Image 1 (cartoon, rainbow, N blue to C red):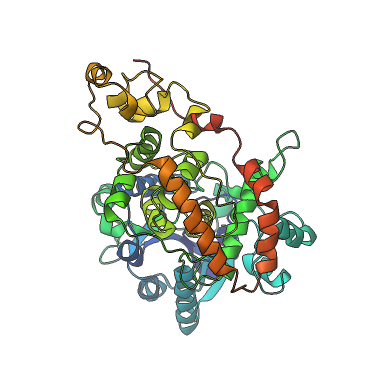
Image 2 (cartoon, rainbow, N blue to C red; image 1 turned 90 degrees about the vertical axis):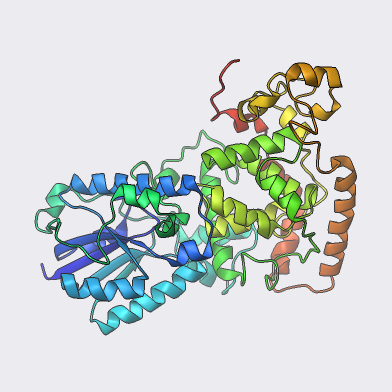
Length: 484
C-alpha cells in the first residue's frame, strides 16, 4: 500500500465499469475521488438550466454511491493544470487516474496535466471507458484514417473482437485498506461547494456539457454486452446505435475541424444563409409549423427529444427549409440537450444536413406530413403547444389553413397568437435541393482523401438511411399525454 491516488471523474460518473478507478485503488493507501469544474467550458460553450440541474443531480448521485463505500466526492474549481499541483502537495499524491477523452480541448488539457504530473513525480494512468474501443487503435487499424462509413468501421472492428474490460464496482471490502477520510477542514479556493451553490452559479457548471449520463444505471459497455439476438440487427439495433457512436467518435478524432464546415475535408462546403431572425424563431419554437415548434419546445423545456424528432428539426433548419448552417443548430443542441456530446453532435448535424456521411440531399422531411404519419390527431403538438389544442386534427399541423371562425373558436388567431409559417415549405424545399445540388457539383471537382469511403456511402445511403429512419411511432412513446 504505497500510493495516495486521485481518481478524476469526468464523463463516466459511475463506480462500475470504471477501469481507471480500479487502477487508482491498486496498492492504494488513500483514494481521493474528485470532479473538477473547469472554467474553460462555460467560457467556450453554452449551458442551459436543464444541464446545470443535470450535473448537480449526477454529482449528488455519485457522492451518495461513494458514501456507501466509505468515501466522498471532492468537487474542486479551477483549471486542472493549476488545481492538481495544489492537491498533489496537500494530499501527498503519487498517482492520478482518469478515463481517456478524445475531444480536442480534452486532449490538449490532458497532455498539459500529464506533463505537470511528471514534474511532480506523479504517475498518470489513463483507461478507455467512455468508448467501447480504443479510438486511436481503430484509426491505426484503418491505415491512420478514420473509417468514413459504417460498413468500413465494422470491417476494422471485426479482428478486434468484442470490447472487454472488468465492469465491477469497488465495494466496502475493497475500500477497507484504501481509506479516504472525509476532511471537512479542507477549505479555501479548492473547497467543495454545496449543491445549492452549484445550482445557483452557472459559471461553475460548464463541465456537465460532457454528458455525465453514464451514472449508476448502466454503462455503455453493459448495454452493448447485454444485447440479445432476438432484437433487430445493426445498424438499427441498440448494439448498432452504440457502434454508430463509435463511428462518430473515430471521425471526431480522425477528421480535422470536425465540428466546423470550413477546413473539414469530409464536409460539403455550402453557401448557407445567415438569417438571425429565422434561427431565433427555430430555436424558440416559433416557425409557424406546429410539429417543428413542439419539438423545439420539448427540447428547451425538458432537454431531450426523440432521435427522429432531432432529424426533423435539423433538416428543417438546414437543407429542408431555412437554409441555415448546421453549425448554428449544433450550438443550440450543445446548449439544450442533456445528452449532447461533441463528436455525436457534430457528426449527426453533418449527416442530417447532408454535408457528410449521408448524401441523399433530395430526401427532405416534411414539417407537416412527417408527424402525421404516426400522430394524426396531433396529441404531441397539443402537449407542448397547448394553445393549439382546440384545433381539430384536420388543421392541427397546418393551423393557418383553418377558417378565421374556427381559429376564433379555438382561441388562437394565426398571425397574432401563433405565427404564420416563416417559409413556404414546398417552395423553399425545391429551391434548396437545387442549391445543395450546386454545392455537390462544386465539390466534385476536389476529391478528398478518403472519398472512396464517401462514394460507398453514397451508394448505400438510401438503404442505410431508411433503416435509421424507421416509423416515427417511437417518437411519442416516451411522452406522457394528459387528456383534455
